[in-house]
Image 1 (cartoon, rainbow, N blue to C red):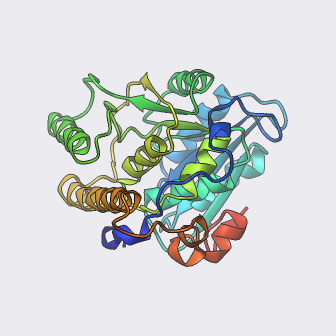
Image 2 (tube, rainbow, N blue to C red):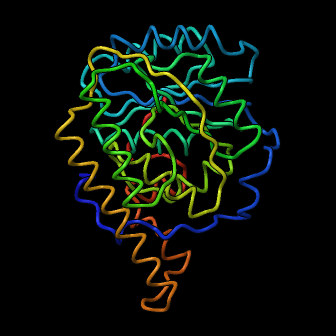
Length: 300
């Protein structure tokens, strides 16, 4: 799936309106905040995460929405999420089949979010609500804010070592200066989220890299915030297989970057915004382009 993505399927980064608008403070038109929880087979851990999150967030009507995006789970994740949504109007549930990958789930949530600030975090509760607060505070100064686990001593030694190696590979391949590209806690002002995620194409775990690359190409300031991820049992990451797939996806992003550079030097035609935004080029399809949601998306 995402490992077969071609570089020509990645749209050249381009403004979708006034680029400068993405760096401005939001004008309030909807909820102040959307928190997205991408889920795949999280029926056991999701209730605790939702309980802690909802207890921390404002209970005022219309202030907050928590958007649970089920990525084709085969367990009772949707049932669990819907039960919470029935009891708390702040919770909204989106689900689809089949499983598409975390990048697809986050992109679906970002394009469906109604908040002026939009944050995604892991459904297993790896990040504390206080870390969410740090991201929101950083969004007062920058249009994009990312959690950075640099120096975080938690987690197995092998995984921490692999994460460091991966980040070094990212720095060398794409020239991204960030200390931690793969943190599962990132926030965006709404205009920045729309500009970035309407152009994102990577469905797998390397979507974070593409998102940060797009933000850099669009010249959006990215604030890094120190966070500490708590180790959780039942991680969905398969170190060797996922690392290889992620490196393949990163290479695809690099090829797109190289192709764009050649185009800007006149070695190849520069695609028009209309061509680059063609629904046929997007893994979300025509329905997603029109409504901000993937085909066969269901809401509850």
